[in-house]
Length: 302
Image 1 (cartoon, rainbow, N blue to C red):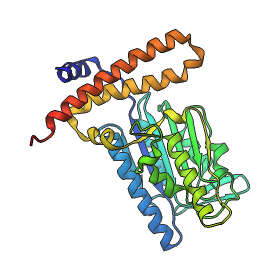
Image 2: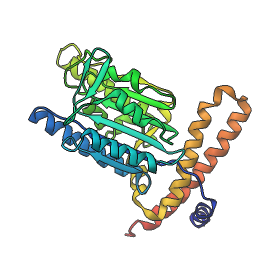
Image 3: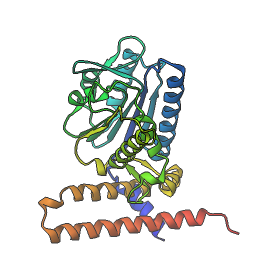
């Protein structure tokens, strides 16, 4: 049986698999309508993240009422100690932000968190790749401080002068639940897909109201198209099945190797690239067949 063979291989091969760790931080709403909106977005992001990481990785939520600087410092330190080499890290800030000159501040109870404060605490993480999404007003002012090798930064605004409450966070959250965001229909939502979806929805929102847009999102960093943040449909469902975890671990590893290969394409001999790609795609197809075999055997018989 394909499934039994692959399970045996997965259990004995000790495949090194990158795990995704997600940190969602809420800020102060200031008004009841914003408090409610931000809380709903955080709840939806948490649900999508947990469905996507399954048994692997971790999802940590710090709501606005608890998001004091000392608490965030503890959370980030604990996370740094648990993130292994090769893992991936996603950080979302949902709330209001302000800017004085070029300095950005995320509004929380007590002293605000600056972009530099956050950047300093993200330094030294073993995570090979990081994405930081600052989905707040004035968030464009955080970009320079947060940029770093291996890190993708997404901001809801292009600078600190776009001070109106940002709609970007709503549509960014929608991207993880809407199949429309899955452009290539592979049941994965990447940073690039979520960004493109949210940015287009924001612009459409202002155009439909015949208003000038008060926010313009920005994305900085490499390989946003290969950083998976969420999974849809069957790709999400199978991650909740503990029996499939060994095969899913292998599949994730192959999927990651394919994305890494694509990034090396320009520096490779064409024949070598396609030979390696074919090998990986065949391996992926075999794993998919094993997953189909297992899920089919679990379906109730008529």
